[in-house]
Image (cartoon, rainbow, N blue to C red; front, side):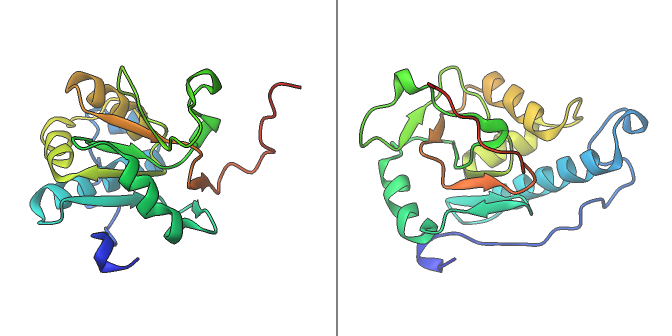
Amino acid sequence: FSDDLGLFQRKIAALEEPQGPYETPALVPAGVRAISWTHYRIWQQVAAGSAPYALVLEDDALLDKEFMRKFPEYLGQTPAGWDLAFLGCGANLHVPSSKRVPGRLAYRMDPPRSRCADSYLLTRRAATILAGNALPFSLPVDWELWHLLRRHHLEVFWWEPPLVRQGSETGPPIVTGK
């Protein structure tokens, strides 16, 4: 990524504590704890940093071939005051076709909701809110994120069509309308 887009990348140790962010770690698989802890640590680092926003990508995120060209256009269509923008379509979640508008790329989600946690932009303000209110986790990070977005009335947008796909979702795409 280029610095002029204000994006940065960091590697974070997944489990700095054996229990991660869960109050009942014995009931949560180690992989789920590691992913949740990594997102939480990213939120902390973004909140403490100076960048206005950060791009969070899980390790199985597959970027659109034209990602670098399209990203500025999508970001430019995301209205001022956004807190999170979900770039991907994990679990095949899409803006309903009945709400899509030709030429529009960013859709406000009301009530706010996540679109899995494989790929999203978050502002420093949102990172501060998430990091300050997430612990202890009770659910996997994408579900916990959904709860936090709603509880704190964050401004959430989904980008459609998505710029990222989850590499771990290897099944064929769902075809509708036929």
